[in-house]
Length: 172
Image 1 (cartoon, helix red, strand yellow):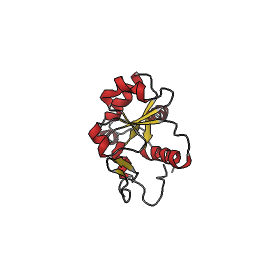
Image 2: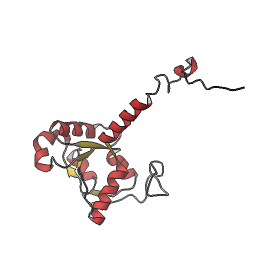
Image 3: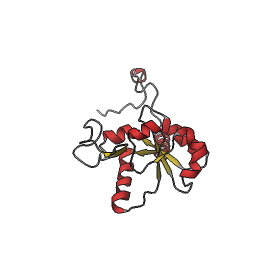
Image 4: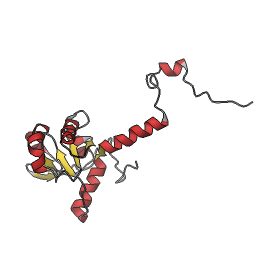
């Protein structure tokens, strides 16, 4: 006896919260995720580019902008980042940034939309921009170096629940 797999949603499937709204078609999903990658950068990818730039002289290819307050900047920021709080974008972006070089913004972390607001303000002024997912929180959790008022520092190790600990690469 040959069995066929029923791919149509059943009442039990549609009642489940995960599939209450069915997944998008493969074409729609591909378009969405391609667009998402055009708007977002991963903390590890940014860190890799910053490291190659600092250690090997490789072209960075983007300007990294910390959109947080001065107090937050002083507490800790990515070395080499440009401090440009979101509220100051209209008056200072053209003085601090090159419109010919893409910008990557970051803020506190996934619970904060400051980097998105900063990216919007920059895009409205003609900058090509991405948001660094995870912000400074995941930069620190993944064990990357930060600059503080007292100098540079780094976690002894990455948070084992949020970053690969047995490899320099998460494999994604």
